[in-house]
Length: 149
Image (cartoon, helix red, strand yellow):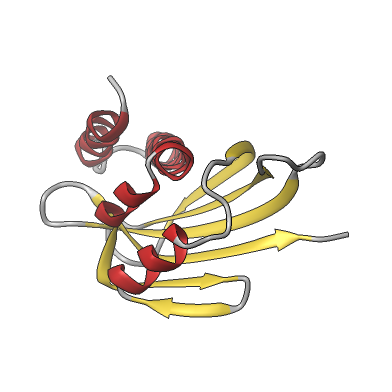
């Protein structure tokens, strides 16, 4: 199982276990968060135009301080970055339930290797995932920052 099928499966598991104990629920939130992160960065690194499916018209992105709103604006920004290929190496993933029913907050740290660069760039990214009507999640909020220093 891979890509969108894996994410749909993880969401199905999340919904099935939503009546479970706090410990089981936390484990499911972590599982869905990790599946989302794997899916998102796989698309970003290999098929960036496909990220369109993860955003909605009300989605927001803060990218290095620049605020964008809406699927088209966000995906234009991501697809017009000054590098085509890249590789994300994820160091940490933290996930928590959000106050939005069924929502999940995901915080990621890692490094970004760009072609022709000797050293990777460290980054942090936060996602607020909201359940969509069709049983998937979409990205309501996305905040990205490079970590300097």
